[in-house]
Image (cartoon, rainbow, N blue to C red; front, side, top):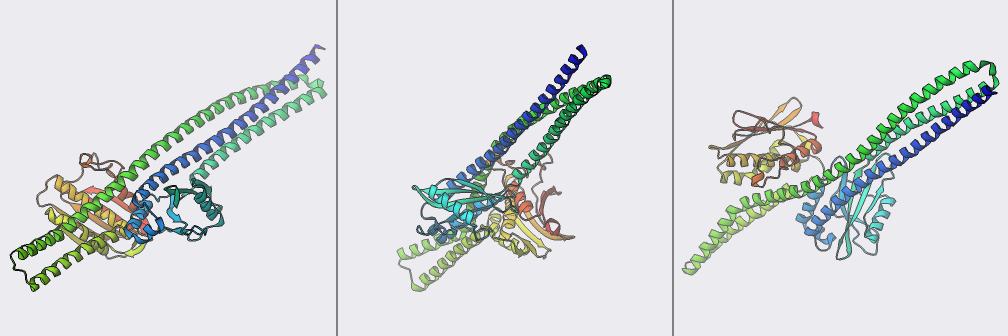
Length: 505
């Protein structure tokens, strides 16, 4: 009787223990599902906060430039439109695929038009058009996913409101590959939980089977008891391992959430500062170069005007002299107009790649820097031996070369180099086309040579240096032009190399 009671109690204990394991595994599955949802929500929230911050800064900059009707202003004022297009283009990366402005010019119709040039297809799906109309009417930011499963894109729409009326929509299309990767990792963990749960089910069924077998075969009670002891030992070891893995998973989830939040905040602050400083630096360089180009013709116009005024006071003014001075003034004014056209073409954002070569690019850049270099007595020479055709973005490549020349000019002036000079060389190296910018300014210190392409690193911080010029140049060459940019020291100074070719396409 005692033996039978002990056997029943032992069977009951094992059954209860198996049920507890099943409950634990179910609870773990529920915890995992909740954790998975929290991670996805954190990632989504981080993306929305970053997109909201980016769109707000872009809208502030746009509304500061365009105060009235968007359609009219952006259609008639080329300089404003090109300035806004270049700012939007600046933030297009491997993640943020398309950034553009659209508007509904006719209040009675539901048709939209582009206010800025864009590479995105000109036809919208019905889903996109409905979302645009909803954002226009509700005056609220809207986010939705693309219905195309092969092109994982998210769309963020933000209305631009002036005097309580929606003037345009800022549309940002970005890649969802990062979010998809997180989901794949979480699904892999889910499969691991399924394996553990299946293992517990197997143990539960095994215990039931041993219990029933023990009832039917009383003569094998000793053997069954030994098997139960072995099973109990396995369950204890499994439970210990499970607790350890559960603790590791909880620690991993907690650290992951903290890291995601910290990185999002850090990247948001970094992007805002980068956007503001890059914009100011670009505008400052443009104004400085225009001032250099205009100084001589403006002085000439002033001198001509003074001469006419003096002749008038002395009553020595004749028609032939007035005609000659008028022609001179017209020549100077035409030079000023051509200068503005050169800068307008130079700062116009590229819509698509085009064929060009180093000679054409250097001819355009030389017009912009020649006056400044001559004013500072800096010799400028070119030896252009590479005549290969490059399929790239010409204006973006000009920006980089111009930035390298201006940096060399700053170093030569700062160090007060006698017989200062800047040399440009182009040549072929295998399938690569290489452009070198060399100066005789003494070179770059070895301790900082590996840092000069980092964002916010500058040796001219006390002179309003932003530390963004070389960083933006590296991003343009490597991400947009699919090339490579390196720096090394020669006997006289620094040598920057831009490498383009089939290797980097």
